[in-house]
Image (cartoon, rainbow, N blue to C red):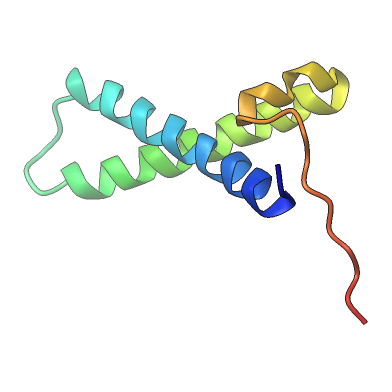
Length: 81
């Protein structure tokens, strides 16, 4: 699999997990009128960032946890001159 595809997978899996998490939270959350959108955006962002940080921490300690990001392989980048 190309590095480009791996990078897309490892970027979008945490976004999908964050969106799914915010959807789950929104099922049981009652908020004031007009606060739904900002709250959903905030929950999605924090859930995605938290998931990514936790998955990367686990992957650094135990490489098998790289699958939490959708691919155990990490992309490699070459320096351009």
